[in-house]
Amino acid sequence: MFSQEQRQHILRKKHFGIILLISVCLLSLAIFSLINDYANRRTLSSYRLFLYNIIDKTAEVINDRYFLNDALYEQYLENGTLDLNGLLEEIQKLSSLFLDIELVEKPTVLSMRDYAIRTEGTELFFNFKISNSDGSRYIRDRYVQVAYDLETTLSNLQILKDFSLTTSPESYLLAYGLRVKPRNLPVSVNQIILSVLISLLIYIIYKRIINRFRSYLYNSEGLETIIYLFEKTEEYSANHSRNVAEISHFLGQKYGLRGKRLKDLKVAAYLHDIGKISVPVEILNKDSALSKDEFGEIKKHVHYSAEIIEHFDSLKHLKDFILYHHEKNDGSGYPDGLLEDQIPLESRIIAVADIFEALVGQRPYRSSLNRKDAIKIMRDMPIDAKVLSILIFNVDEVCTRIRHRKKSRSENGGSHFLRFQ
Image (tube, rainbow, N blue to C red):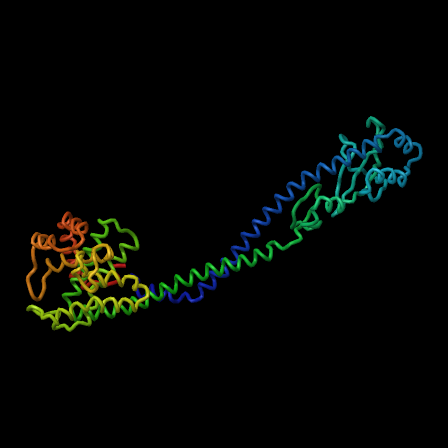
C-alpha cells in the first residue's frame, strides 16, 4: 500500500496541520474581506445615485431662484461687487445647509451650464454664474462660490453611519470626487471569530484523518508481523486465505458490493483464518481424522481471529465478518448457531469462497477435488443460495483467477496483506 519512504514522508509532516490552520484562517478572512468590500460598493452605489439627485437638484433650484437674476446681474455691472451677506441670508432661508459665500475669480464652470459642483478635499462647493434672467448674458471673469454642508447631508442619508469622509486614494469613490472609507475594520469581530472556528474545524477534521491514518499505518505494520508469522508457521492456511480473499472479492463484485464495503470484504476474507496462529500446528497439519477435542480446538480459531482483529482500531469493524464465516443458514454452524439473515452478508460470501477453495485446494490430509465435484458437494450445504449461484455461474473465471494469483505469487516471491488495500 505505502512504501517505507512514503510513510516517512507523511509522518515527517508534523507541522502541516499548523500551516493548514493558519492558511484556512487567513483564507477565510480574505474571503470575508472581499465579501465586505463587495457589500460596501453595492451600498455606496445606491447612495451615490441618491446623492447625485439631491445635490444636482439643490444646485438647480438655487441657480434658478437667485442667480438667473437681472437685478443681480445689473448690480454687479454697476458696482463691480455684490451684497454677498444679504444673498447668503436669502439662500439660507431656503436651506440652512449653505455655509459661506464668496466672489471668486477664474471660474471653472462650463459654458453650457449656469452652475458647476466641485470639491476640495472633503468639502463641496457650488459655483454659480452671475447671469441675466434668461442666461444669455453673464459675467465671464467672476462667479459666486457657495459652500455646502456636505457632512450634514451625508449624515441625514445615513452614509456617515458606516463611512467617513477621507482624502486617501485607498478608499471608495462616492460622488463629485469625494471619497469615503468604512468606519469598521475590513472584517468584523464576528467574522474573525467565525474564521478561527472554521480553521479549527478544518484542523480537527485533518487531525482525525491523520490520526486514523497513523493508527491504521501502525496497526497494519503490527498486523503484518502477525501475518508474517502466520505464513511461516502455517503455509497451507496462509495460501488458502489469499485464495479465499481473491474469490470473495470476485463474488462480492458480482453480488453488487462496491467501494469501501468491497475492500473491507477482501481484507476480512484474507484475515478470516488469522486466528489459526493460536492453534497448534500439529492439529492444523494432521493428515488423519480429527478427534472431537481437536476439532473443538480448530473451531476456536474464529474467536482467536476476532480477538486479534479487535486489537487494531482500523480493522476491528471487520470482526463480525470474520467471527461468523463458519455459520450456516440452518443454524448448524459455529460459533453462535446463527440463522440465514442473522449472518452478515460478508460472512456468507466468505463462507462460500472458503468452502470452495478448501475443496479444490491441496491439503495435507487429502487431494484436491475438481470444480464439478466441489460444486456438487456445496449444493447440499446450507449456505447462501444467491452467492453459491454466482460462484457456479462464474466458476471457470474463479478458478482462472486462483491459478493466476498462484502464478503471480510464485513469480513475485510472495504476497502481502497490504496488497489488498
